[in-house]
Length: 467
Ligand code: NAD
Image (cartoon, rainbow, N blue to C red):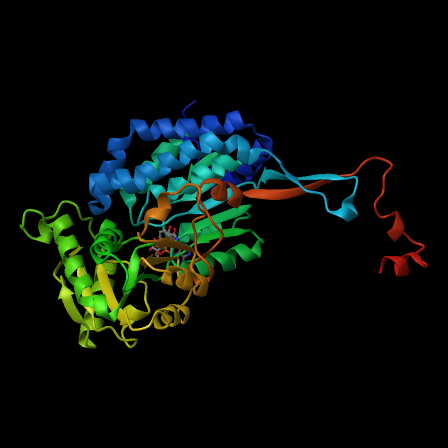
């Protein structure tokens, strides 16, 4: 039969079919889930050059960066899940409190069911497939909606899924806002959204119609504190990499720096050295670097330049960079000082290669500054004293890293995610498995034994005895 002649299956029908698969997969074994992870891993190994090409076509992402930040995090998640899935799936015993004498109890991890994964453009392979690894580990079929702003990578993701899974197991819906909104109206059993805080609120509102639980991996402004005891050269090298990798389009990039006033000039000098070392080793100019991606599109290019213009018009000083090429969608790594609260750059997530530097005199001033802003996705502290403890105890952030930045994304054993404005729920490794699992508390009573005999009517004097 010519399958091409069949009418396309409606997404509502696919979700219904996936619901049936979810029932069948509810009791799936470790081996079955590991097999699904294995075919995913094999496909990625066989198609590395296609993945690199797609990312290059979408926004000239350097091959080494694709390997490090798109392929490696996914294969690392897969290998970690394959190794530990058996222990994650094993019911965990709950200890017995006195009133439950005679019973036994445990937590059973059951797959939530059919999942929707909506992903952004900035790490388009990693952030679509990473959550899929967690969904598969937990035993959930899934519908993926990758970003419309990276058409080559999203098409490759669709092709991969089509080659490996039946639509009733995993399927990809390509498209933009309308497709996303149509999917959000369907009764999924879990929604895993990665994207902006603004759209995260829409996702949560839509999910509430079906009371669908959500994981929201959102954005925000991640502060970076450099104290007076920090090793400034070391801090500068690490901050420059974390900020300018992917040309600043990273959710956990240091958004702005708070440096002790006495160290500001040294930090700026070291940051400039670090930028030149990484992106202009042959002195041909940073624009010639093959190691910097491009801004994703003209809308974002204009947004970032408007932010820069607003800051400079209101008195910010460009300590480095500022050059740009609209046709190439390129903006130089740029360092700014003289920042004030009137500037847009102090409030909006920058999500581009602009690095504002603010100063403080007392550490309490830096802590107060962070606490008056929405809770960030990550907080970075460069420090060699006990000020680190003070900062961590007195601020709130999804994650924190001491004497480095962005590295925590690659740590499979740490929960990754935001808090408040920067997100709800956690992902990666066991925490990703949990996001797609219902932790079912199970209590087993012995036949003929009853703990609540004392509580059964007629209450009479029994109630008085208990109280
Ligand atoms: P976005 O919120 O604009 O889009 C994300 C996804 O939502 C896309 O697939 C898009 O098609 C869809 N979408 C857009 N508008 C929608 C609407 N009105 N209704 C329903 N769906 C809609 O985000 P983006 O621009 O693709 O990505 C950048 C943002 O993502 C930044 O804020 C960044 O900080 C954040 N981010 C967070 C993480 C994290 O792990 N916490 C990772 C990467 C990016």
